Image (cartoon, rainbow over all chains, first blue to last red; front, top):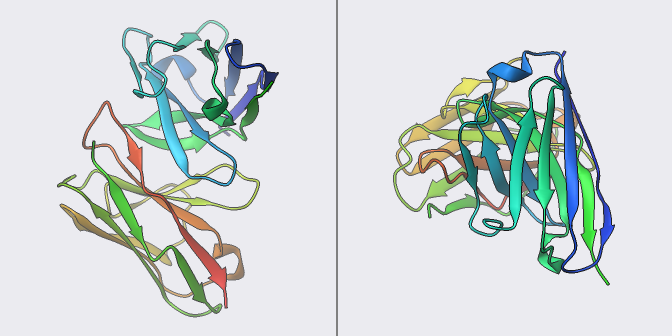
Length: 117
Length: 108
């Protein structure tokens, strides 16, 4: 069965950096695009970024463009999100999700990122 | 940016009743609309894609309809496990994906 397990969340000061990871199993990771989606505490869902199956194209929400970088290592079945210049408004649970024609058919359980001094 | 507006914000119903949730887009999204269910402390789960197709393993009591700007998620007879928050999502404006603000379905 499809499993997505996020890690790397934690508490970071404003302006700091963090790298999230998402370990995938149960499907051919190298054949699917992948997304990051976040959810601020008590709020709705916000799409963050997408990467094609081969890493050739990457797309970002305007709110993170220039600060976050999505990447993947198909040899390790792992997705990444490098987050720089973090702000208080980036505080959220970050989910990785498998792409199904630009819908999101499987999600991990999420990792909490808290940006606070 | 395409804005999705869900209504009502909260829906209070009893098990066995029929639930009708609405999602309206600020411009046409064709049939590129999906629905997700999220229970407290859990990740979202894909229910419906392309407006009316049930995702793998989703019970037949869940159905979706609509096209263009107006969409509906219907739960024909509520089970206790259906009380959750529901989100719609569009992919028409790719690479920008947007979600609605959610409808909370609560037990009356």
